[in-house]
Each structure stands twice: as structure tokens, then as C-alpha cells.
Length: 107
Image 1: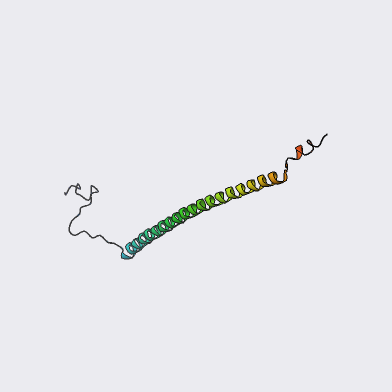
Image 2: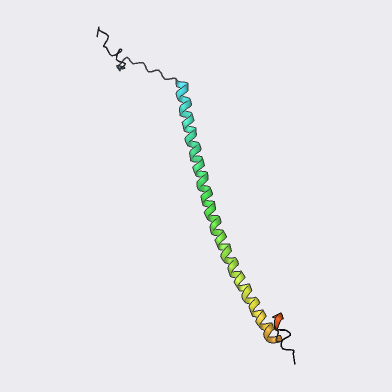
């Protein structure tokens, strides 16, 4: 190793028992805290997103139920109106077509 071809001249690091590896404790603590908070906030956002999805599904089912209910009510109202119209046409001999009102009166 006297000719300059040792581990230092080749750019190779030698790991042994006397290796000093200095870690800045404040820096490591801050990094750990940052990633912990980042993970906690990510989980918080995921929980909020799941809650919104559940409420959306509930709202969708409520909307479908209300829509079905209103459609049934509308069909019943239309049926009642048709029955009333048939009754009035039958009882009063009404012709509700304005174009045919004057056709039968010519003598």
C-alpha cells in the first residue's frame, strides 16, 4: 500500500468497527415527525373520503326512493284525472274537442 494504491486512493470506503456515523438527532426527529404527520393526514383524508362516499350512496338511495314514490303518486293522480274526465264526459255528454263543437249543430 505504500505505492498509493490503497483503499483511500481508489475511492473505496472501508467499513470497520471504528466507523463514526454522525446523525443529527434534531434532523432525524423532524423527519420522523414530518412523515408521521404526513401519514396521519393521509389517513384522515381517506377516512373523510370514505365518509363522503357513504353519504353519497345513502343520498342516492334516498333520491331513488323518493323518485319511485313520486312516480307512483303521479300515476295515481293521472288515473284519477282520467276517471274524472270519463265521468264528466259520460254524465254531461261533453265533447272537449273545440274543433268539433260546431260540426254537429248544422241543420
